[in-house]
Structure formats: structure tokens, C-alpha cells
Image (cartoon, rainbow, N blue to C red; front, side):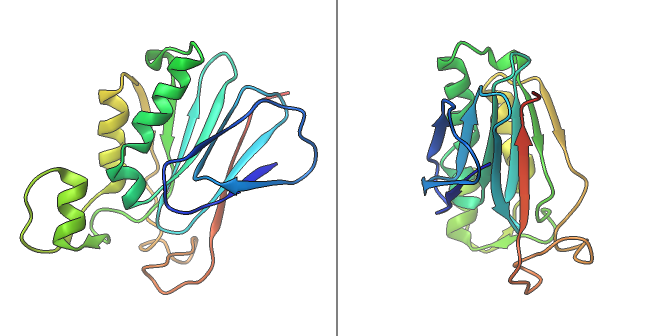
Amino acid sequence: MVVGRQVHGTKLLEHPGGMRGWVRTGEGDGHITAERGLALAVSIADCVPVFMAHPSGTIALLHSGWRGTAAGFVTRAVAAFSILGKAPTELRVHLGPAVCGRCYEVSADVREQLTGHPATRAGQVDLRSLLAEQASAAGVRQISMSPWCTRHDNDRFFSHRAGDAGRQVAVIMRRL
């Protein structure tokens, strides 16, 4: 299993294989590999775990908060698949449990960075919807979204917005 030191950025770490056991890498908020038996993991609370898979077996997992979403992390990951010869139209993307748009209020500045529209006051933003739009614009046609909100469903998930210090771990692994 591979984990990185998450920094709310857009660094996608590529793992070619040959790794054994629990591997902690340097800074990075996402992983990509075509290696069989290698599990990729990120920790999340209210941010979005983005699961990506190509029929060839290449997989990726991203941790996307507002900074990663504003910086187009999903678009960068789709481009990484393209560089590896994997067509965006063949990718499957799933946006996992995260804080929903009704529960995620951000400052005017952050809202403007996320939406690209002028904002004069704080307001709600739905990160999963923005990520789905970005994936679609990058050519992904198979996009699904979890119905779970980490804050609404706080009996089931940790939520920073609900005052929890804990985190969930999202994991994706290519079949052996």
C-alpha cells in the first residue's frame, strides 16, 4: 500500500512497481499506477476522494480539497492517463463521500477561485459537482458520485466541519 504526505496540492505520484509492504512517499495528494497488487491510499475527512480507473488496469486516487479542485487536479490526472496512452473517454471516475454543497461554506475569495465567477460574499460550494464538471470537460464520460455527506452522515464518517479530528482512508487497488 502506498500513502503520501498530503499537502492539499496537485502533485500526482506515479508508482511503477516493485514496491512491497507499506510505503510512505514524499509530498503528494494523488497516486497513479498500472502495477497489479499495489493499493493506493489517501486520507480524507471533508475533502473528496477521487477514484479513477481505466479498463487496462491503470488506476489513480486523488485527495481533492478546495485548493486541488481550484487548481484542476482532476484535469491534471486525466492528462496523466492520456500521457500513458489511456483515453479519457474510457476512464471511470467515482467521487467518494465528502462534505456536500449545503454543508460546505467558503469565503468569497475561495468561492471565486473555485467557480471562476466574481464573489462578494461567502457561500456554499459543491466540490463533487465541480470535480464532475472538470472530469467531464476533460473527456471523461463515466462519472459517478457518492450520495454520502461527511457532515450530514457524521455518525458514519469523520468530518472536520463537524469538529472531528479523525479521517477516513480511501483505497483503490488493481485486481491481481
